[in-house]
Image (cartoon, rainbow, N blue to C red; front, side):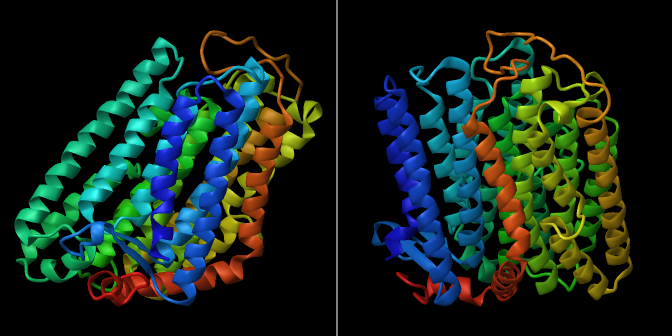
Length: 512
C-alpha cells in the first residue's frame, strides 16, 4: 500500500518522458497529461482518507530505513495539500489545452509544454511528500527548472528580462538553501525531518535559533514574504494566464508549506512567535497597499497574492492548534481562489487586449459569465461571507484573539484592515473592467509570442476549466465543516509531532 505515496512523484516523471516521445501527436500528449493528473487526484484522495482515518503512509525508498534512507511521508497535511494542488493543476491543464486549440488548432503539437508541466507536477508532489531536507531541495529544483522553461516559452525580450529576475532570485535562494542543508548536517549529522526534531534540541540555543532564522529566509524568498517579495510582481504577470495561475497558486504555497513543516516539526518554540507576527503584518499591509497602486490587472493580483501570504504567516506566528488550523484552511482556499482569478484575468485579456485597468470597461455586457467567474473568487479573496475566504479568515482571527498577546491583537487588526483593502482593490477591478462604457478590444501587441490577447476568442474548455475552479472555491465553503475538522487534526499532528516521528522513525505508519 505504501507504493501509493510514490505514484504522485514517479508517475508524472515517467509520463513526461512518454509525452516527449509522442511530441508529434498533440492529442496523445493532451490526453496523457489529463489521464496522469486524474490518476494522481484519485491517489491523493485515497492517501488523505488513509492518513486521516488510520495513520500516515510511509515509503522507505530502496528498503533503507530512516534516518539513513529516503522516506516519503503522506500525513494529513501533505495529503490534503497534494489533493487540492493536483485538482488545480488538472483544471489549469484543461484551460491550457483549450487555449492552444483555440489559438493554433487541434493538430498543433507542443514538444515542451506537456512534458514540462508533468515534471512540475512531480516537483510539487515531492515537495509535499518528502521526509528530509535534501529531497525538499531537490523538489524545489525540479519545480524551478520546469518553471524556467514555462515562463520563457515563445516570449519577448521584456518577458525574458522579467524571467531573468525570477531565475536569478530563484538560483540565489537555491544556493542559500544548499548552504543551509550543509550547516544543518554539519551541526546535527542528519537531514531527516523527523530525526532533526531530537537533534536540534541538543544544539546550543544560539545555533538552533540561527538555523531556524536561515530557514525562514530561504522559504521566505520562495513564498514571497515581505521584504523578500520584490521578485514576484515583476515576474508572474509576464507569463501566459495558465502559467501565471499555476505559479501563483502553487509555488508560493509550497514555500509556505516548507516553512510550516520545518519550523514546527524541527524547532521548539513558545506559545506565540513575535517575529513571525511582525513579518505577517508587514506582508499583509505592503502587499495590499501595493495592489491599490497598480493599473495592471495581473500586477494587482500579484500584489494581492503577496498580501495574502501574510495571512498564512499570521497563523504560523500564533503557533497553536487553532492558528495552524486557520493556516491550513487558508492555504486550501487561497490555492483555488488565486488560480481562478488569474484564469479569469486570461479570459478578460482575450476580450480587451490589454491588462491596463484604465483602458477597459463594460465587459459585463459582452460576457456576463466572465463577470460572474471573477466576482465569486474575488469576494472570497476579500473574505466576504459566506465564501471560503471568510471561513478561513474567521478561524485565523479567532486564533489570534485567543492568544491574547499585544502583537497577536495588532496582527489581527492588520488582517481586518487588509481584508477591507482587498475588498476595495477587487471592487475597483470590477468597476474598471466590467462596468462603465464598453471599450473596443486592443490588438495583440506581439502576435508571434505565446501570449495571445485581444482576439475575443475563447473555447468551452477555457471557460469550463475556470468555472470548475470557481466551483471548487464554492465547494471549499460548503465543506467548511469537514475541512476544518481535517485541518484541526492535521494541526494537532503538527504541534505534537509524535505521529510523524513515530511513523517515520519507529515504523508506526502504514508501510513504515
